[in-house]
Length: 243
Ligand SMILES: *[C@@H]1O[C@H](CO)[C@@H](O)[C@H](O)[C@H]1NC(C)=O
Ligand SMILES: *[C@@H]1O[C@H](CO)[C@@H](O)[C@H](O)[C@H]1NC(C)=O
Image 1 (cartoon, protein in one colour):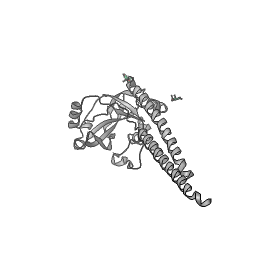
Image 2 (tube, helix red, strand yellow):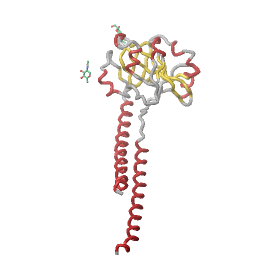
Image 3 (cartoon, helix red, strand yellow):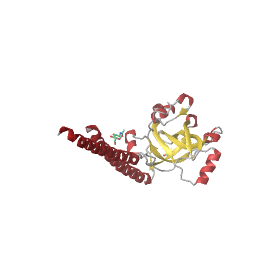
Image 4 (cartoon, protein in one colour):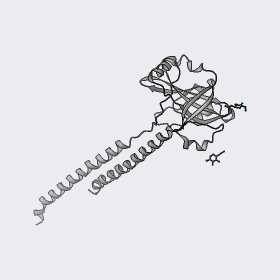
């Protein structure tokens, strides 16, 4: 009885805690969205890695040449229902360290053409700073030796691209594409990577937890109330026997 009586309070407390988390998450997303609106930063020649977390989601502008020999394929990726991969390439910056750039999506059909390997010369890239993704229990381990990557492990990718001795820093930038759908389709048809839209892709599932916990609290409170009523009724029935 005591245990059943505690459950509604316990689940109510969990719901309230999730509500707090929801408010925090909305605040965080707002903050990151504001950050994303700021003018692009030019990264210094040598990037201080300890300050990267502060600059996640900041727009950056980079100039350099692609290291096509160390192209990495992030798979599988889906863009608007089309299956394909994302192409990560080290960008060798003029007078600066080499950083990793996720250039964006290439469809499975066009991957074989290797069009993304043709570009030569100096390019300018606008992207946003990111860090390694969290790997979940369903994500396979990366296989750098086969050029197969399933999640962005920035340290491992930087090592694959040559590591510190080759002037590669574990800095990861996702290239931004802000053109319209027609331009994106043209790029996809030609097998040229299409970057990501400049949006914050944080998961926010707290609202569903809030609803679940509060609903559970309500249901268990009703159950407890019915138990109480039944007990009292039974007690009432038994009463005469003790007279
Ligand atoms: C990197 O940034 C941190 C924090 O701002 C600072 O303490 C540190 O001295 C910097 N390191 C270098 C090499 O500039
Ligand atoms: C890189 O350094 C060279 C020589 O110091 C200089 O001429 C050139 O303008 C620099 N490039 C950039 C992008 O700063």
